[in-house]
Image (tube, rainbow, N blue to C red; front, side, top):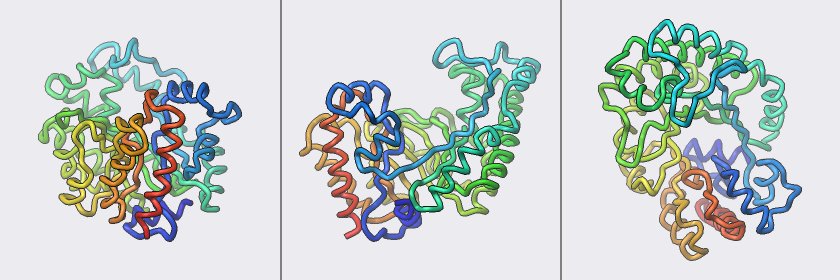
Amino acid sequence: MRNRLIQTLAFQKPTDSLPLIEWAAWWDKTIDRWRGEGLPEHLKTTFDIMEHFGLDMHKQFWISPYTATSPGPAFHGSGILPEMTPAAYRELRKHMLSPDAVKWCADEIKEWTKKQQANEVVIWLTLEGFFWYPRAILGIEPHLYAFYDEPELVHMINEDMADFQEKMIDDFLELCTPDFMTFAEDMSYNNGPMVSKPVFDEFIAPYYRRVLPRLKAHNIPVIVDTDGAIGELIPWFTELGVDGFLPLERQAGVDINAIRKEHPNLLIIGGFDKTVMHLGEARMREEFERILPVMKQGGYVPSVDHQTPPGVSFEDYTIYAKLLKEYCAKAVE
């Protein structure tokens, strides 16, 4: 099970099938709908549901920069910094970025590592990136202004995050070597990146240059998780050493066939258009045929291009899971 993913990310051909991965699981409202359509009540956890659909098991460890005393945002998209000053940030910093964040989940990491070593589960590590984290601190709109109005504050936040990430990577690697890792960024939308290349080079790239060597030294595939249209920023990240991207959202115009042609060594996860999943087997099969050429090339883990929405019925997803198995086997024939 785990070997399928390792071989695929190495552009090798697994013996039986590509990985059967649902990297983002399902919206809670999707599960609520399925409960009324036949999903057995005894399937309580994400892992239960993965097993029900015959998917490969994976465990994500998202090492959070927040603590029990970290404040929360007043509303979605607002920040948690009361005022845009270094002094206010230093006060907030006391409630963030605990050096014990990995230690808090060490026992759980050890237990899952036993399953990983038995080839039963894929383990992946997630850290919040250098666009994502200051946005959460400052708020969506203030963050974008801060690149121009408060550059020292943005650098201060990302310096602290780089320190935190270096410690978390070291601590995690003492317990487990993840099969891949992701940086949560979400710095694209349907028309492209939310920042310019000069802003990226000044405020984001230097911190990836600090952190990535720790991961590359252990041959851990590094994936950036960013929604929307990613074409323009792919070279921004790959020149730093990033290996790939997810989720490759089709509704943002992302075409994995075009991306693979332009970037033949890029690792990609996702890419299956979630907006066709409610349209029946024929339409889903057509979508699998669209992505099959890339599936055959390696370096690609096919999966829904974001969480399965509640418009997809239990029957729809059952068909999707059946087709996923069929085409993941066909890709290695």
